[in-house]
Every structure is written in structure tokens, then in C-alpha cells.
Amino acid sequence: MGAQKSIHAGKAKIDVNVDFTHKICASMMLPSLRNTGSPLSLVIGSLCIKHPNLFGGSEKLDVSWDKGLYDSNILVAYRRPRPQWVAQQCFVMQHSLSPEIGVHGIPVDNFSRSGSGGVNLSRFSVGLDLNEPASSKWSSTTSVKFENVRLLSDDDHSITRDLDGFPVTCSGNAHDSMVVLKQESQYAKANEHSFSRFTMQIEQGIPVLSKWLIFNRFKFVASKGIKLGPAFLLTSLTGGSIVGDMAPYQAFAIGGLGSVRGYGEGAVGSGRSCLVANTEVTFPLSKMLEGSVFLDCGTDLGSGRLVPGNPAMRQGKPGSGVGFGYGLRFKSPVGHFQVDYAINAFQQKTLYFGVTNLAS
Image (cartoon, rainbow, N blue to C red):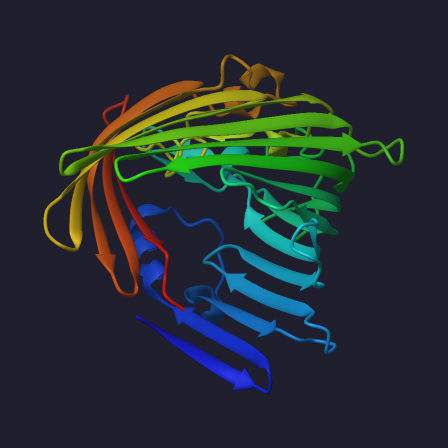
């Protein structure tokens, strides 16, 4: 239920994708987050403009705009050609707007869904990405960016406090500013029967000005996949922690698709630290269809009370949770479709829909 179109204008390429499918899926699984009567609220889609030779020296310009049901993202990336043995540079400017559900969302239906907490995140960033030359198994990216984060109400007005009167920024003002140095390293190894992957992210807030945030945040993801006859076993462990200055929106949110299924986004908890374990077995049902069974669990390691304002406690989140269930994976030429049926520790059932790897 959508349309895709590619247009060539000289050397530039324009990709347009408009899709109504997610509106139907989301209406069955999400409570209303924002009330809007605009016809554009029914549409999700993307617009991508690519130029491979902007100034005649193989400079590449990518401009993309993605619109979801309740969020949007604009990205401008400019790359200059450099020798392959040195780090590749990319100038990036980005603006995103999305509901802040993971921390400030209100759990409903026995924590199986999360509704709006009246807080939305508007983030603007500009900076430089450096992609180091990859070895056979290791790759790394370093970036330094200025970020400005502003919190908005559902009516798009700047706010400094949530619905309970607690501050939503670290500075106490309508916005937080920071310069962030980020290092991301990834190790990957694969063969015909298994694969291993490990990713580590470290972010450091640099105190360029006295009022800017100073913090250190790290996150890791370790995953292992093993082929067991016709079936495939996938396990993963995700963890992280943050020390120093912190705004509530920087907390680790636990719960939801990609975390602990059976719970709404962030409905398990939100803390300065987290640990999430996932195990899933998939098995073929036909050439294009796979079945799956899974078990997820996660915890904030008792760090929810250390988040400014303690939003998890105020919303009654348990701080730890277990979810299990089964699902279907459908692979087609236009993309991969995923349906999961999960049950949480409160015996509340949740249905998830997912669409990935859409063909352009």
C-alpha cells in the first residue's frame, strides 16, 4: 500500500517512497501519541537525493528525509574523496523529532504498551565522522559533533518540566547543549555454520563551555549465531552505563521490540545502566517463511532511582522483566516482514509488526 519512484536529474538521483502500510499496523498496536488532524499524519515515507560528483571532484552529497507516524528525520551528508588507506571524512548535519516514549512514556495494559508522556525530543547535530580503514574483522568510526536537544510538548511548545513537574533537561533550561566525541568499534567473524559480532560504543561529553554536559556513556552488544541443522540459534547480550551529567532522556530504556518483547517501549524500566539478553530460534516453514520462538529478559540493575526525577519509579515500572513468545519471518523481494506474539511477566499478550530491508 505505497509507491516508490526513482528520478534521475543529470548526475543526481532522487528516490521517493510513500507508504501507508505502517499506519494500519501501528493503529492496531500503539495508543495514540499525538492528536493531529493533518492528512499528512496518515502518510509515512522517505525522500532521498544523491549526487555522486557535486563539484566535479567526486564529492558526494546525500540528502534524506524520513517521516514516520509520529517522528521525522532530516540528514545531510557530504563526503570528499580520500585515499583508501586513510580515514574517510564525512560532514554530517541532522535534525530529528520524535516522541520520548522510552523514558517518559506511560505504561498501559499491564506494561504491554506505552502511551505518550507529553514529552517529545527535538535534536539538532552537526559534526564530522571519520571512518577508519577496515581490517579483515575489525572496523571503527570516530565522530565529533555539536548537539542541541530541545524538549517539546505534544503541542510543539518548548517545555522544561514533565507532566509531574520534574525537569526534563540537565541544565533546567528549555534545551541542553553538548559536544560529543564518539568512538564505535565493531568485530565480526562469520563462516557457513556460525557468526560472532561485538560492537562497543563510547561517548564522551566535552566541556567546551561550563554549562555544557560532561559525561561518559558506553554501550556494548555481543551476539552469536549458530546453525543447528535446519534451525538457527541467535543469542545476544546488550549492556551499558552512563556517568557524569545526565538528562532523563539519556537513560537506557528497556522494553519493546529489539529489547524485551511483551512490554511497551521502555515499560520495563529506564536507568543509568542496563543489561538485556535475547535468545531466538528460527526454523524454516517454506522457502520464504520462517517460524521462531524467543525469550527476552532485561534489567536496569537497580539504577532507575539514579536517573534525575526517577521517572521509572513514578510510572511504576518494575525495573526488570521477562518476555517470551513466537513469531513468523516472511522474506520477499520487496523486504522482510516480521510478526511476533509475545507474553510478559504479567501474562499480558502483545503483537508486534516489523518491516525491514525494503528494496529501493
